[in-house]
Amino acid sequence: MAHTFNYQLLLASTSTMPGERFLAYLSEELKSLFGQTKTITFIPYARPSGMSWDSYTRHARQTLATLGYSVKGIHQWDNPLDAIRESEAFFTGGGNTFALVHSLHEFGLMDALAIRLAEGVPYLGCSAGTNIAGLTMQTTNDMPVVYPASFKTMGILPCTINAHYTEAIIPNHQGETRMGRIQEFQSFNPIPVVGLPEGTWLRVKGHTINLEGNGQAKIFTPDQPPQFTDKIPFHAGQYHENSDH
Image 1 (spheres, rainbow, N blue to C red):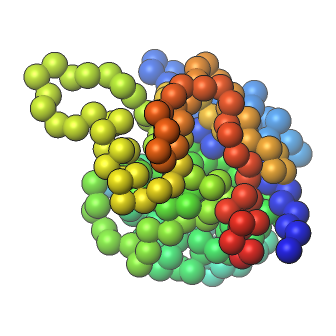
Image 2 (image 1 turned 180 degrees about the vertical axis):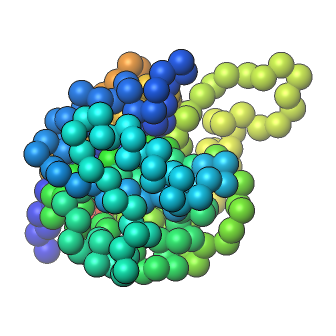
């Protein structure tokens, strides 16, 4: 069965680079992504540091207003499904991926959002908002503060994402490295993983996935040595094509 996907996505490892303002390093990219959009629907469910949905939405609104965009929180709609069906663009902020996925499943939004994005509605994801573009959220770095109904996410990318990927070693720290954690995941789940370092993002246009920003991503492919690369070896919608979803 043939599938047509018109994705227009920017999937960033982080929203804020050290010493910079929220979204500052992405400002030109956001103008390209959102174009003539007037109002962006913000999805604040990840609640960084326990921030309220209203506070997080105000934070996004203040920043995006400087680029000429209005922002409305999805929780400010009477019915969040109406927000998914009617919005002209979306931004899902970072924070805790468990909290984000829990709310998206609780409100029945995960599949509905994936369908709108396949139609070409612009989407910005940062950190947790990027994690949900993959097959599952299981390579997040976050604490399981709530238990979502499913770890399943949108499946736009035929992999999982590890945002904020780093190979830094903390002196005297005896816990597993990030690479070790990802390899633990793959011992149970033969799924590719993309480690996105800070300052990098995936730009998805139609089926094409390009790595952009200031570095390379680390690709973990089952049964192959992981490697840094500036090329993403698969395309958007590939999972749905292969599974005929």
